[in-house]
Every structure is written in C-alpha cells, then in structure tokens.
Length: 274
Image 1: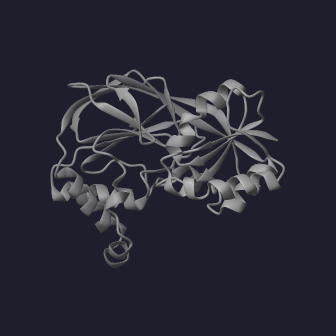
Image 2: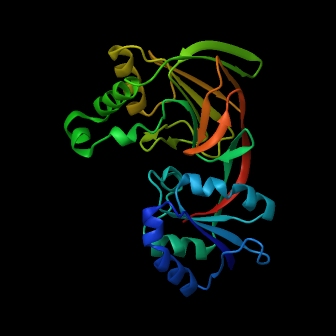
C-alpha cells in the first residue's frame, strides 16, 4: 500500500507520535509519501482529528482512495463512531488490514465535513465538562451548566430554514447541522447514523434555566427529539438564512458564512475500520 501521510501540525498528540506512526506503518509494509504530487497513491493516512480528516476529503474523492485515521484530535468523534482504536499500533494495524466502510459526508459552501457544522455558540460544550462534576451531578446537570455558561456570551439571532418544501423561522443562539450520531465531544444520538443518508439540524432557543434543563435532559437521553428550547429537523439538505451573515464552522474549521446550503453526500467516503 502506498499512502499519503498527513499529520496535523497543530495537534500536540500528532506531533508527539509522528515518529511512532511512521515506524509502525512502515513495519506493516505501508509506503509513505508526503508530497501529493509524488505519483499515484492507494490511500491517505491522517493523524489528527475530525477537521484534519475533513480537509482531505476532496483529495480522497478525487483520487478514489480510502482514508486511514489515527485519532489525534480534541474530541475524535468520528473515531469513536467507527470504533477506530486510539492506540497507535492498533490504528496502524487497522489501516494495513485494508477493511473499509463507506460513510456519508456533508457539504456546506463547498466545504466538506464529517460530524457537524455550527452557527452561533459552538456546540462543542464538552470543554465545560469536568469528569468529577459528571460523576457527582450526572451528565444532564453538567450539560445544563455548560449551556448556561455558553449563554452568558450568546446573543439570539433570527434564523430561517428551508427543507423539503417547508420553511420555518425562529430565534436561536445556536444551529448545529449534524451528519452522524456523535458530535460536540459528548453528544450521542441513538436514532442517527453516519451512513443513514440524513442530516439532522438542531436549533437551540434557550432563554431560561428551565429551557437549559429541558435541553440538557434531551441531550443526555440520546434521543433525536424536540424539547423546550430545542428544535430538531431531519432532511437531506437545508437552506439556512440568518438576519445578518453569521460565520459557520465545519468540524471546527471555518466554512464561510450564511446564507448557506447544507447537503449530504451519501456513502461518498471510504475509511479503514476494524
């Protein structure tokens, strides 16, 4: 196997493991190249998180090759979804074994992503989550606290979404358009999947402690359902407009501004999995 190696230079773990990754892959018979123009390749190996992997989707699709992921990001939602080992040796062995699975990818403003795109307050509330608090108070209480902390600097904005011939208008502090079941570091939705050909849009309208608690209970329950302060939608594509242009992040990376169209590209990408 001849593979292009991409290591996220901003990933502390990726930089630390650089030598181990190279040595392990070579020991398994993987020939590594680092110049994309250096001839044909059979795969792309990414050491990083969801954003680093997403940046390689256009290259993988153009070359028609799978991606191998060595988890080295902050949340690693995709690796958790696909049960890709966090141990370097095991992750490299997974790549060398050659078993692949095709997943959906999403696209907004020409930018691909794998887990979620956000408008407004970041959905990555896991940064407020402490394990000791989670054990003491429970996941719902921790999520509610994180939501209230986020709202301390959030401002509601006017949003309009169009999907499947329908329109809806509301005020929100956050929109998340998810491609799979795991996103934001700790959200895990039972009735969603990264290969179900759907996008799920979640709109947060939290204006009170009661709404924060309601949303927290819904998130902790792992169900894709609306609650006080939370709207949920499912479609293959969403048109999103806001009162004024808002920045969009996709897997934590900049992805333009609103207005924007979000769409799913079904079973587009192959990844090495156990």
